[in-house]
Length: 332
Image 1: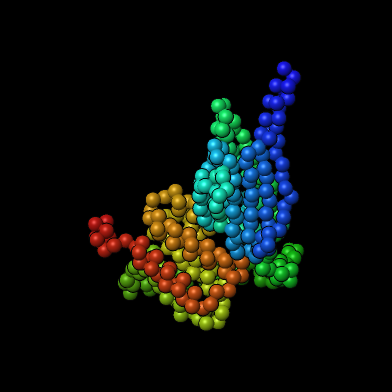
Image 2: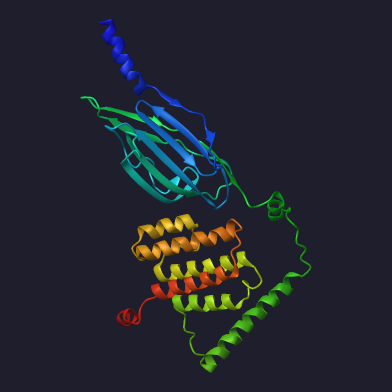
């Protein structure tokens, strides 16, 4: 009886214990960690251990199992973020045979990540479930990977930060040298000027100024931005701030979305829940705003040709989403 108990314990021990290898550097300058539990071996590899803000890294999660053992997919949930990292793309290949004459199966998930948060951060651990059906009674288990430390390097130096933040000055006492009756005369003068101006305008029958539609205002603002010469002066940040501000005000006027007062992430999330834009238009706008954020906040410096292309892309978006002549006639 004791021999049978020892035999069962020896069979169950690999499933109840999990061993972790230390984090190691890859030959190409990346970082890797591996974990083993029972019949499953998991490796998590990042192609770089440090990157600049806004740059992307590739994360590969790979599981190797014997035949008869399966992995629950997706191994990493792609719900938009992993810790402080944004998921830009995810590709998975499941239950493929091992290459060559090796027996077993392999599961692979490749993710493209980026982050706008600088400092020492980490890719968090993942809990991956597996199902062992090699025996009559299936065994289900979970293997937990180790986190990967990543350094995200800011493009702003300490002197840049000091130059942007200044101490607040205390309150300044205003000295009013004018007597009260002087202010009263000044106020009466303003009222008189307003009254005379109103009578003059009514007397001449000034035509009512026609309010521009959101698309007309956007086209006029884009033309003024192109004529401002900011790109020729290499003033990239002011150019992209004005460009995205024009597009956000157009979206607010055209679709009613609170674009100017929202962050890029908040706006894209609100846009994703609406049906005002097609999926293709949402993807184009998302890529446009993220590229502009790289210049505005991560100090990316694209060539002037890229700025002209972004201006044309904004014009195309306005023309594509503006109401057609037929729809305007029907609304009237």
